[in-house]
Structure formats: C-alpha cells, structure tokens
Image 1 (cartoon, protein in one colour):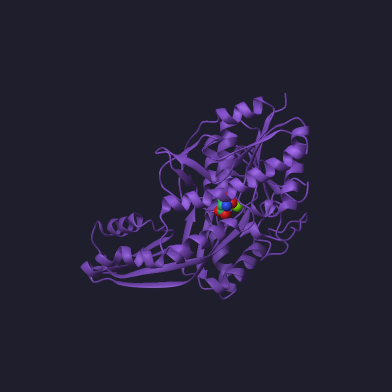
Image 2 (tube, helix red, strand yellow):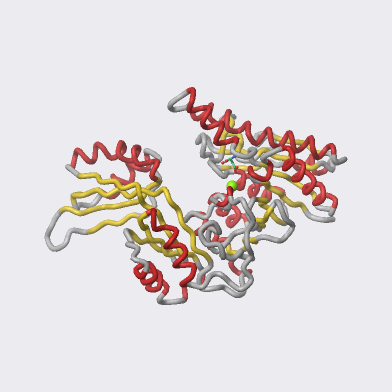
Length: 420
Ligand code: ASP
Ligand code: MG
C-alpha cells in the first residue's frame, strides 16, 4: 500500500477560485497515484493581512484571544472551498479546523507552539478513503481556546501533521520553484538548490529566507520529517530538506540570505558590573522583544562604563525603549536606536572545516565599500549587519564571490510573493 503524503498550499496557491480548483486537481491526482493525502491550506492571498488590518480598524491593541478567533477563519475558508472542489472531482473530502484535527498548543495567543497532535480524526478520515483537509496556522490551546501559530504557521501545521501520521514526505507547494541560493529578485541567476540539510535550512530560515517558517524546520529536524518545497504551478521537483547525513557532496557555501527591517539599539554608558546584561535582556524578553545579535564593548584600560549594542526587528523599537526605561534611568544610560539596518548572511555546512571564509566575506563587502556594523557567527553561518540600502549589493557581491550560481541555474517563475 502506498504511503501517506501531506500537501501544503500557501496563500498565493489558493488565492482565487481558479487556483483553488487547480490545487484540488493536483491533490486528486496525487490521490489517484495511490497515496493517502492530508492537505494543509493557508488563507487565500493576502487574507491574513486583511484580517489584521480589520482588527486594527476597530481596536488599537486587539485582544490576542479575539485576534486568534479572527485570524483562524482565513484558513477555514480555504479548506471548505477546496473540499467542495475536490468533491466535485468525484473524490470524498472532509475539511477540519486545527482544533478538530487535534492540534493542541500552548496558550500564547498569536504565536502558539504545538504541544501535541492527536490525529485520530485525521486517521479515521483517511481510513474512510477521504482526502482530509486541515486549516493551517491554528490549533486549540490546553485551555480550549483557538490559537494561531504565528505568521507563516501553516508550514508548521503541515510538518506536525506529517510527523503525526507518519507521512513519507511533507510537500510544501508555493509560488517559487524551491529554495534558492539567494533571493532571485535580487540575484536573477540564483540557483535552485536540490537538497538542503535541516541545519542549513534552519540557519537560512532564521536569517531571512522566507520560504519556510523557522519553526516548521525546527519541527522537521526534531521529528525527522522530509520537506519537499516545490512550485504549485509546475511539476518539476523543488528542494528537498533532509538530514545532513544524506548530503553527499557538501558545497562550501550553500546560500546567501538577507533581511531588511532590522534596528540596532545601543546602550551607552552601561556600568561594567556583573548582572547588567542579564537585566537588560530579561527586560526585553519580558516585553517579548526578539534580540538577534549582541555586542558588548568592555571598557578599555580602567574605565568602568561599557557600551552594549544589539539588533531587534525595527517594529519592536518602541517596545524595547519602553522595556528599558527603568534601567536607563537607574544607571543614567543613553539609548540610541537606528532602524536603517539590514543583515546579510552566508550559510553552508562546508565552512566548518574551511578556514578563510570569514576573511572572504569581509573582504568582499569591503571591496564594495559596504560598512559592516555588527557581525555574528554560528559554526555554519556568518552574518553581517550593514546599512539597509546596501543589502542588495552585499547579497550580489557575496553570491558572486562564492560562485553560487551554478551552470544548471534554474530561473524561477514570477511572482515571488511567498519568498519575501
Ligand atoms: N495565513 C497565515 C499567514 O499569512 C499563515 C500561513 O499562511 O502560513 O501568516
Ligand atoms: Mg509561507
């Protein structure tokens, strides 16, 4: 008997009736090949953005619980419509909300984490020879409230269901042909990657590649779920995300990623005593501000005041200032912010065993006259914060310097909405 597959379609792939019908046809043909099919759908097109805007029209700070009641509707609409289209193709479909599908989360509204998947209702549907459609991006909390999983969360729904039903593969159908060696909107000859390891994909998602939600990759790695990220508009195979052991020929560098929308916060005149860094970061954590890079300059020879800088998403600057206000007053610290920052990163498992990669990155950026504001590294990633207007140049220069556009460059199709 053929195995089970999870097929997830992103917002652009179900944006209008024609696309829903096209997705339905693709789902049905997968079923007719013999696979048991679980489908996860995103909200149509920009529906989630519209719902958020609607909430902000009636309330400055919408109640998070009600926000989740609202946002979870988008994916339900997609699933019900697609189930109707599948039924009309002569197959039996059933759509389920996240809650009905047994996705249990914690109670943190608008960014809940999946705790458990009780997939008996999905299994029962499959046993009845149905195609089971599950609304992405949502679940039910341990206190029985509807929750959502954060932007891009349908990817995580799909991976979690794939793990729960023991699917052979979790297929993510999107509007790009796969994962690229850089954003093709910036580097037109970026190469489609055939295989990427979980570890590299984690670093890529965390440093700006928008194809897969970071948590979905984490979940896939923890549960050993293979992800096949592919185009919903063409048949060609896309990018498969696999355990690192499966990558035989590891290139030195796999991809260049970037993000815009970063801000740097500098605290000037921080007392150089134990415990201060802990207080600063705790205050930010309590306010739910996500810190990325952190640098602290120890005072040189004898001084007692240090400078501390870190980056945060630029739309969290106000929260950060608020969270740090009392520490600022207590120690007479000066807080400076600059929200014109971007970040460019290179990712590649091959750099672990190769000296000189950092030197090449910094030299390449230097040759372009691009000032590096901050640097952070992991064993398989080097990231530089640079002025946001230089990000495209930085991406192109690094992509060229590490010769990432291979001979078999595949040109992606338009549009690239979900890549961003
Ligand atoms: N519709 C949600 C969003 O736009 C979830 C998703 O599409 O994955 O973030
Ligand atoms: Mg997405």
